[in-house]
Length: 331
Image 1 (spheres, rainbow, N blue to C red):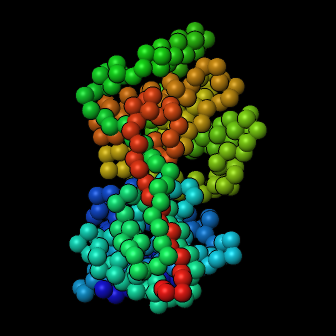
Image 2: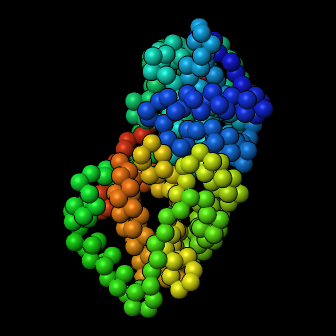
Image 3: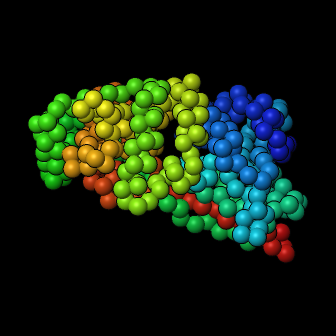
């Protein structure tokens, strides 16, 4: 196994096609592990120095990739995964057949390289390959539970799914719809790259959180420009869907979702706070899920967070892990 440490963005871009091939060859990947997402993330949020670990087997084929950057954080030289913070799945792409040799190579690198003090790798799968680095005798390391995601499995058709939901939820969606349609029609739409929907998402998301005296994710992370570029990149890979609800001539609610491997990842949603009493967020989720069932998606993924409403809509938790590795005197 040969390790190449990539420390320039230009070199990383050169690997985009091979990186994509690796990601698409693995069953567990999501949009957040693709080069389209992570290269864009680095352009907007990257700091310090790239430290992407690329592993090649004896035939020079890519066996695995751990996309990191090294930066100063709380007085430590920290290795952090690209995408951290606003990405929900960051398990590094490693071929199962090469898992053990990649991890051995990684351990040897971490032992011999003195340019880091801490690895803090979040949003990993519970069965992460990186768990092997935590083995006794390697480093001062631990595996912790991370914030879970959740997902609605889609089987037996939408009518059966909806009949199984709590009666209060079904009643509220019906009453909200009746209340709105007493004033004017509601129009649901699903589309790919849609500049109007993207602009509405950014505007309504900020407006909604301002009503609560908070900045919201887009403003807090200054991620509007990142979203615009990431959406354009993922649209070229056919991994974008906007669900929107139009009322009285304008978009009143919108969801940005990433269709990938027959799963819809609901990344970000927003609704007009002026219409809060109409429950447009619930109505739009209802219509979006019906669309997903009718178009034979296997699941709807709510991503991170254990908010009670997700269970009410039928989502089950997906446990996640975090690996923390500290350099000590024995490493």
